[in-house]
Each structure stands twice: as structure tokens, then as C-alpha cells.
Length: 211
Ligand code: GRF
Image (cartoon, rainbow, N blue to C red; front, side, top):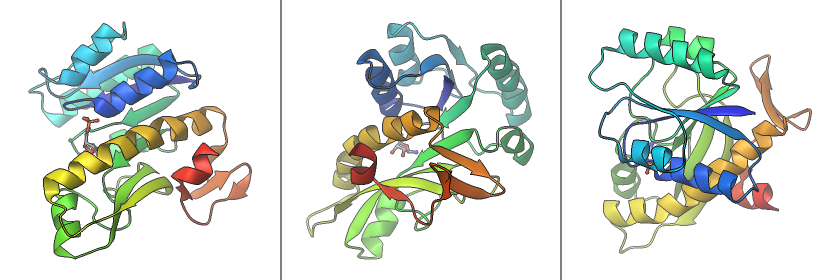
């Protein structure tokens, strides 16, 4: 499976995918990385791993999408992964990749769509927090959730500590989901998420994915 990744910054989730492919347990071809920020650290991570990159900073959305789409076609991408990509894509672009575009989001969806998830989870005094990988649809963070990884929030947690705790959970989850998509275990058909040919009623947990 030929996979491209969109990033906006640090790219630690991209790094997790790079490491999983380098360690050979994730059998995909990482064909390219596109960033909407020219100074994204993730671009350096990709370059270091010998992966083609395209920096498309300071472009209006339609220009970004037009150039990105051309590049994705050229790379013959089968799966597009949004990993810390902080720009909202147009419905037209998303429609063109529906069923083959996933995103990692730092909350237990459907809770806390959008930004500032750590702040909002603390304000709500939730006891559980986590991350979700979902197929992307034109409604923000609302596509079918494939899998989630979660942890208990403690009384001492702050936005910063939650961000620190969630990171390794994301890094463990995302490459595994990509692996199962590459094995055609998860797919979308008729607006239903399937696992191994059966409709998936609720997102898988990390433990179900890892074992
Ligand atoms: C992650 O928490 C991701 O869920 C969110 O932005 C963060 C990006 O991290 N959308 P990185 O760029 O992969 O390090």
C-alpha cells in the first residue's frame, strides 16, 4: 500500500510510521509527506528517512489542495494519513479521498471534536482521555472511528501533562491502524465501517489491535 502523510508541525506521529516501516513490522510504502508549513520539523524527519517531501506553506486552501492533489496522483497514493495536519480541507478535496483518508485526533471521539481537546477534557472533569483514528469525512472529526487508545486522567493532570501522556498512545495506535488498513481488514463501504468483512459496531481498542 502506497501511503502519503500530511503534517503541519512536529511530525512525531509521522516518525512513528517511519519507525514502524523501518523496523519492518509495518508493511507499507511511505511515498511522500506534504506540509502546509514550510518550517515543520516533520519535513526534516521525512528527509532524514529519505522520503520525498513537499512544503506548501503560505498558500490559500484551493492552491494547496490543487498542488497536493497533483502530487498525490503522481505518487499513486492508496491511503492518505493526516497526522497532526492542522488545516481544514475542503469538502471537494475530502470527497475525492473519502474512504482512503484517515486522521489521528487527540480525544475519545465523538467527544471533543476540533481544537483544545486537553483543556476541554479537564474542564469537563472527565476521568478518561485518549486518541482516536478515524476515516475523514467533510464534517470535522466526524467520520467513522476505527480505533482508540485511552488512559485515566489524574487529579494532577494539566493540559501539558495530558499532551505528554497522549503522544506515545497515538504513536502506538496510528501505525497499527495503518497496518490493518493495508491488510484490507478495515474498509468503508456504503457508509459503514467494516472489519474483516463484518460491520464494526464500535471502535477497536488498542489492546484489540495489538493482540
Ligand atoms: C497530535 O496530538 C495529533 O493528534 C494532533 O496534533 C498532534 C500532532 O502531533 N492532531 P505530531 O505533529 O504528530 O507530533
